[in-house]
Image (cartoon, rainbow, N blue to C red; front, top):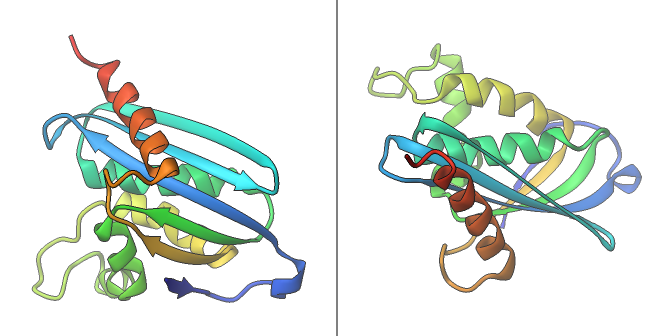
Length: 159
């Protein structure tokens, strides 16, 4: 588990929320979808969406952004995803370097998806997020639900 905390309220005041996310793409780029499940106490909410022309990484990021955006006050979040791109970019600090360099990677090449990272970073400041990476398509209940949601979304764009 990788803890990401960037300030905020006292942990005792925060609600604990579990979020599971996944993105999917038919072709890369191609039609894509994302799915998320939020669990708070006994309450569970599923959400999903898609785009006609996107990439898998954009859908993975969008799932995280949309799920965190539903939280109206600072929360303690355990966010489980099968996206190494999302987990490593945040927990290894890459995204903060890209941002400092004007959305360029260490080799000077443009960082991908700066528009989405700019939406995610304020959410990471608001919430105390612990990222958990899991292997995709390995029978994890909520990862499988998110995958089904994401696939159903991209299939809406098939002609």
